[in-house]
Length: 416
Ligand SMILES: C[S@@+](CC[C@H](N)C(=O)[O-])C[C@H]1O[C@@H](n2cnc3c(N)ncnc32)[C@H](O)[C@@H]1O
Image (cartoon, rainbow, N blue to C red; front, top):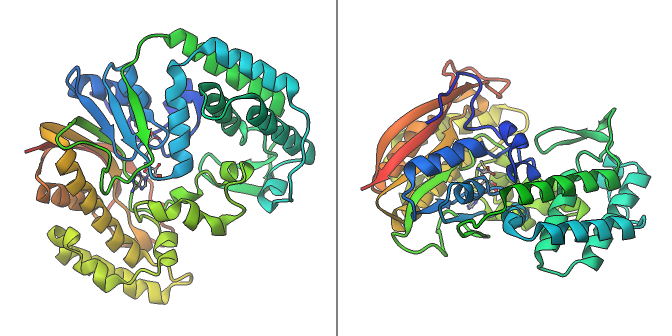
């Protein structure tokens, strides 16, 4: 395993991926390190053993498994993110065909207009840049065949440059900050050509037979599509119970491709499929806390969960915003309990599971997620092998009162 320095983790950050072939094709801040994942695959999966990532994101584990010589499968419930992962897995395709298709697209693209104005796009782009990007989108859709490797990769390339071409501040995480203007704005045509050139170069450099890898647009809570006792190693990072809204992570990109018109569409288009790990989700589903606490899936942690949710409920009534952290936390652990039950079905006896995950402190109430996930895993038949601290995280919650530093760790289990 890599040595982990405090404060700078090779495990849980996407940053090193920006220099790694294929991993660098789309920056997903929720992603973890491809180099670390590849080392873990080589060390912990048998040569022909199937690797599963039930929270596949943009496919870091799957690409790492391919490069590490193991077959793999991923589940990703966010449809747009699953599509990004599926496109990345096309890296084994014909680099020359992508090069030719890309050149044709760039030569043919003419400035195009949005059918209707969309507020986020108007705030994020100067009109000329938006017209050029829309023209490139039109050229990709007209000149490449639906479902082809060239279409998927050209689409990915365009999705990957949207933030660089925006004049508004686009934070590494999901947010678009229209009032913050960038000094360096990339020109769409030039940026797309550069992105395609990087992709073609990576495909040529890696050209080799890779073991099969696929991503299913599916749910980790059921693992439908994964055969019983078929998995050798699970390598994954689930959402943390810390109020990140994954539905919002690709809002700019989904708006550009016409999948959503605004924030209000996110629940229907993606959030409803996800593990409930943010207060927006709890609010959208109008979750009521008592039934969540009686859910059999949280049985192993019920006493402590009730205490934490009661404290959060009391604070909710006193705080502006009235965030539904109590419902979010109760729903989150029920969902993760179901994930472990599903993993118990698909992991072979003796197979390993590694989760990179962190605890949290909404409204300053410490939620010991690492301990609780351990108890949920144990209830589904997983024995803890190791808890390896990755880093102590800065505490995001402004109004915290707790004194426990937040921890992020690799949790390793073996299936009994
Ligand atoms: C921490 S990120 C994982 C990122 C991944 N390790 C990578 O490198 O790209 C968690 C992912 O889980 C996905 N997700 C949330 N709920 C899910 C569910 N019920 N089933 C499958 N995936 C889910 C989110 O959309 C998000 O992409």
